[in-house]
Image (tube, rainbow, N blue to C red):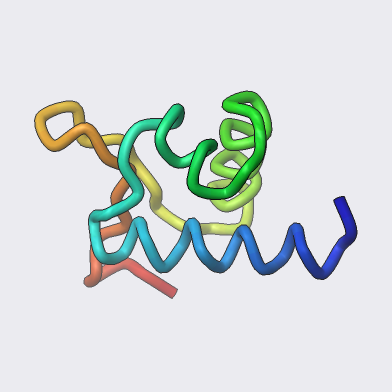
Length: 70
């Protein structure tokens, strides 16, 4: 995957997480056409860069609190 494509997918994950529409790792992987392991790495990379991304088990989606989003 090219850097630009990877960066765009990170932005999509951030957008979906802020709007609480990312879904499960499996659904997110299908949306972005990558593996679930790649999604896990991307989520960790976002966390490492200071994004407070969490998985809400009740809603079955990744979330970034709008008060904490960068």
